[in-house]
Length: 116
Image (cartoon, rainbow, N blue to C red; front, side, top):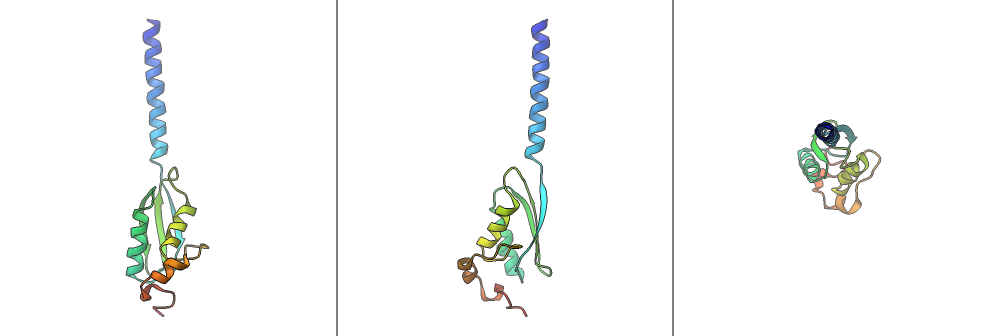
C-alpha cells in the first residue's frame, strides 16, 4: 500500500514538473525593432532572415514605419541576437548598425535614401 501511494505521488510530481517545463518552453515574448528598411523587398529580406533565426516564432515588418515586430521564445534567443540577425542581412536594427558587407550587397533600392 505504501509503495502504491509513493508511486502515485511520484507520478503526480513528475506530471506537474513536465507540465510546468513545457509551459516555460512554449512561452513567447514580443519585441519591436526600428530598422532601416524602406520597401517591400526589404520586408521580404528581413522576414526571410527571421524565419531562419532560431527561436523566432513570427515576424512582421511594417514598411511605412520600418518597425519590425518579432515574437520569439526567450529560452532559445535574445533581442540582441535578433538585432544582430537583422544587421547581418544589411539593415540597421535599433542601435545596431547594418553589417557593412551585407549592406553593400543590398539591392540599390534598399539602401538608405533610395526612396526619398
